[in-house]
Image (cartoon, rainbow, N blue to C red):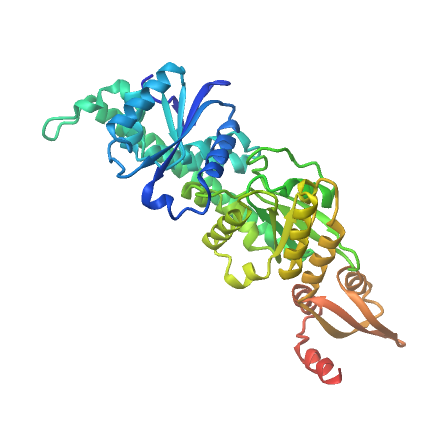
Length: 452
C-alpha cells in the first residue's frame, strides 16, 4: 500500500481489517509512567477495537534511543515488518505520537497503513459524532492533524524527487495545492464553529435565566457516566461498554430530594490519557460546558486497576480547560461500578469514602448509592445559598410563584397589601431576584446576619 486513503482526514479501514498494536516504551519515559505496561496495552486494544479492527498481534517494544526516521532501530523495524507480512496485517497501530516522517517511513518499510495514537482517537471520534457540531469539531481536528502529514499522503505524486533550485518537483506542487484546499476548509469550519460558540453563549445566557443549577458529569472514558446519567434522568443516552460511546453532550433536568426545584445535569465526552491537543482545541466549545457548570461531578471506575492514574488524567484535562484548583477541590467524586467489587474491595471502597470529602460509592447499573449521590449534589448546590428577606405586593404573583419554584420559603407573613418572606436562595438566584425587583438586596444580608 502506498499510504492512507484520506478524505479530509477520514481513513477508510473497511470492516474488520487485521491489525497489529505496538506499544513503544522509551526507557527513560517508561520509568515515569503512571500505568503498568499491561494496562496501557489493554487500553490500546480497547481503542483499536472501538473502530472495528481485529487485533491479531499486540506487543510492547522497549526503545533505548528513539530514531528520528523510524522511531525503532533497523533490526526491530525489520522484525516487525516480518510479523506484519506473515500475519497479513492491514493496519499497524503505534500507541504513541509519530512524526510525519516516521509515519511515512514505517508505511514504506512495512507496506501497510500506520496510524499513531492521535490518529486512532481522531478516527474513534469521527465514528461517534452524531450532531452537526460534533462532526464539525472532529473534521477540524482531523484536518489540523492531516495538514502536517501531507508529506506522506501523496506517495503517488513522486514528491520525493523534490525540485532543482527554485523550481518545485511535481509532488511539491500537488502538496501545496492540497494544503490550500485544507486551509480553505479549515477557515470554513472555524467560521461555522464560531457560530456554534455564539449559539452556545446565547443558550448559556438563556440557562442563566432558568432557575436551575447546572451539574456536569466528567470522567475517564468508559467510567460509566452515561449509565449514571440515564439512571438519574431516565434518558436514553447510548451507554455501552466501549470507549468513547458518548461524544455529543446531553442535558436533562433532575429533581433533587429535599430541594425545591431541580438541577440541569450535563453528560460530557469521556477523557483519556494523552488526549490529542487537536481534540482539546476543537472540542473547546463543547467542553466549555464544564466551565459554565455550577458543580462538577467526577465519575470514576473505582474497580479499574488504573483508577488513580485515570483520575490524574481527568484532572490534567480539566486543568488544561481552565478549571481552577478551587473548583477541582470542590468536585464530587463518584466511585462507580461497586456492583463489580467483591466483599473485601467493597469494604476498602467504603473506607475510602469515609476518608474522602465529597465522595460517594454507587452502582449506576443497579442504582445502589444513587439516592446518596443526589443528596450530596443537593447539599453542594445548597452550599452557596443565602437567606434573604423580601417584601412583595400581593399583586406580584409571578415573582411569588418564581420564589416558590427556585427557593425554599422559610417564613411568610401576610399583611393587607403585601407579604413578607424569608427565602433561601443560591447566589445565582439572588442575582435574578435583584434583577426582577430592580434593586440590590445586599443590605438585607447584613440585616438578617445581625438578627441571627
